[in-house]
Image: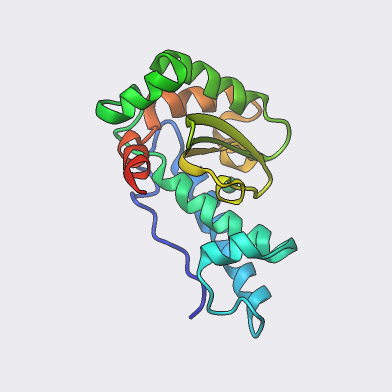
Length: 194
Ligand code: MN
C-alpha cells in the first residue's frame, strides 16, 4: 500500500488569523503532499515499499529518510495546533511543564528562544524522556524518535511555514503559536501514551 497524506484535523482556514488558509493550502497541499508523492516514487519496488512510515523514518537514509521524516513531522505539526489552542496547559500536563521549566511562562520563553534562534530550516519540539520534559531543536527533517525521545508538540520553523503570513518575522509566528495555537490536549495525549 502506498504512503498516504493524512487528512488535516481542521479546515484550511481554521487557524486564521494566525496561520492563513493560503499558508495551510501551500504547506499542506504542496509541501506535505509533495513529500508523500516523493516517498512513493522513491520507494516503489524497493525495500521500503509497504513499510510503516515510522520504520522508514527510523531506518532509511538520504532522500527516502528526508521525505518519510518530513511526512511524519508535518502530520505531527498539524495536530500540534488547534483553533482553540494556546495559553497554558492544565492537569498533569501543567504539572509536567512546571516540574521541567518552573512555569508555563518560562517554558514559553525558552521554547520561543529556541524556535527563533534555530539557524536555517528545522523544527522546535517539546519532548519527553526519562528525565522529564525538554525543548529540542532538530535540523531539516530530523526528529526526536531518532534520538530516543518522545515528541509531545512541534513547531515547524522552516520559512515555508510562515513566510506568506509573517515574511521574515519568525518571532511573531512563534508568538502566535504559543499564544493562540498550541494544542495542549494533543501534548497531554502524547505524554500519556507509553
Ligand atoms: Mn513544513
